[in-house]
Image 1 (cartoon, rainbow, N blue to C red):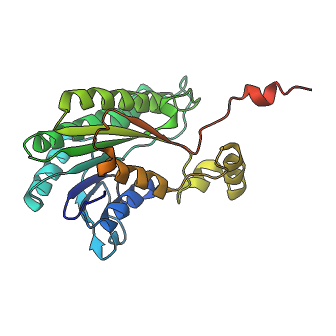
Image 2: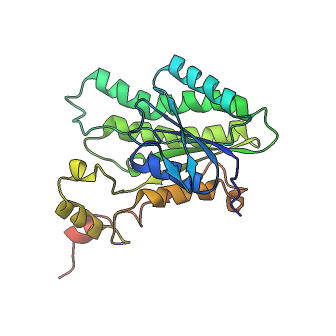
Image 3: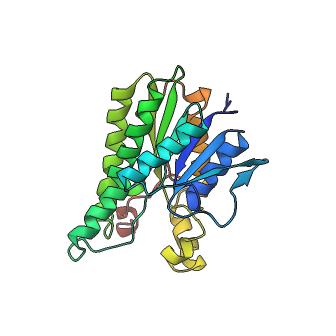
Length: 254
């Protein structure tokens, strides 16, 4: 049901965190993977004897995107899957953050995925086979998150963008999104404070653990498999069950 051998995959931000696991998961499927990032990884990303191809690219810069697309076209006859994974934002108070900060966050998490998708879609439309675009969103897209106003708005916009592009580009390109929950990566301690704090958060999740980058990678593979042949415009929640309503703790019966 999963046959990605010799398929060409592009992963933005595919050198660390969730992105590197997505990259490795496709390599394990014997696909040819191109990773787009600003900085070259310290080590070659490989799995099952297959090595990823690094392409230097700042997805916030149109010229940089165009140069990356040109390089990939010269190395591959087709583009079968695009994973818009690059993104993120530091916490910031919406009242005090600068306009420049807000614009930069929206540019990285919404405008850039649209620009990258547009350029690869032009290639995908000319191919005989059906291609896939997968947008990595976040639970901040679906609920208010103080400190993440611009980021949450951008990720919410990415889910809506997914649904619109799925309609515009069907049936040649399937476009889906993944709403990512709390994931433990190499940078989790910097974000949450300590392993103790991470464990506290894990206890609030119905599945009683933080997610792993591999959990998101598996969802990407699913969207590219035969099991998802008729799925497009979807927003798949991969969050371990989400978060229980706060009122359940605030209004416990005596």
